Length: 499
Image 1 (tube, rainbow, N blue to C red):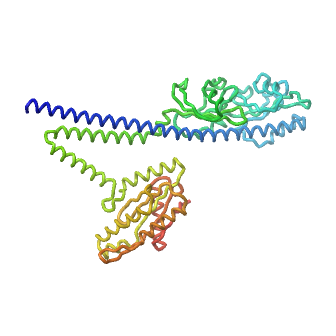
Image 2 (cartoon, one colour):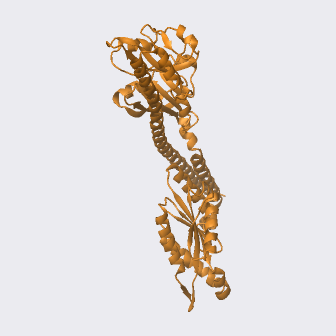
Image 3 (cartoon, helix red, strand yellow):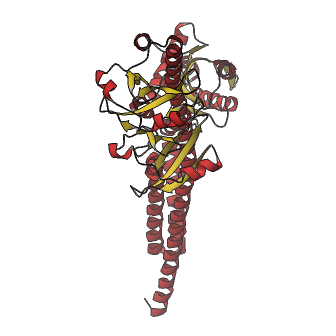
């Protein structure tokens, strides 16, 4: 080969390699953009879910505090009416409160001495130095006080107190009535958070910035420490919202969603990390990476083929057409039924799984129709398999005209079809679509002057009431279809989940 020919060939190879490199770079760049887009979308959804958790935890917190406060009002009223410590003690004994939440109710006189307690050692304890006592001693109004979590001098446990002031008849300070609350009564409920492995839920006081409850549980020496956080600036501007910050202790970038608890000096805070978001994207990222790798490998193969065939343009074009055709034929064989051009089992199963994932995330409903043609064997026996195949094509086209573009029809085998109605509505709408399908199938068809007609028995099953997985829902629809057969064919039957 002459030097000039080698030079030209080298330039052609360089151009091919450059083009391949640019395409691969574009694929990687697009993949990175798609990944960022998926991340931002998932982050928006997680912030929304965190907001729902915050609202739920807030309602639970208000319920516990209202329960304790109602008891305090009752005890205080009884004591002021009777003036008797012994009768008030008996009254507290008869109160039906949950000891797992409210450990005890105490009465304290104006000197800070505990006068009513079920613990004998408590009456030897003076609480005049406690924040709640000092607050009520100096505050004339009837304000609720929710203390930080402190080591109780009587029980030796870390507890928080919800308290109310007791006034003498002349309005002077007469003492305090308070309930001992177990912090875990809040944090055990916070365990219901389902955002990720690094999520945290915290109940904080807005005045002293100290924790009242947290999941996961903090170290005991942190209960007394004010929490330094951008939350307090954010709370000054809006009662509810979100912000991002890097955790000082863990050096992890986190998203924080908060809500001020109305009329109480408390704020609910839920936080999660970037890892929590990326963990939710593992499957999508894996699929995207697999797709990128497949395309890049294909491009590299094509590049090698191009380099090998550069000496002959005709051979190059022929090889390219052959690869393209093989790829198209292979894709069609894998993803579509050869007879009806409907999605294959592989493609249908993939769409079915995605529809269930989407329905579960968005609290929606999706429905599966199991369609079995009645008396189709008689068509094959009387008119031949060629007519039977042509009839299957016609019926497939009719069913596609009845359902929406977002729905999927699959020829599951022989004369059986599966129809996936994503984002389906109530049974009335489903029944209407099914009746139109049955009418379309029932319409006679003519072949060379011969008329043949079939009907369909259809079983209907929906997520989530009839099953949680594709296999469960398909079995429920299959059972319902057989019930339709038993009832005389040419009808539809809704699944009835056992139990």
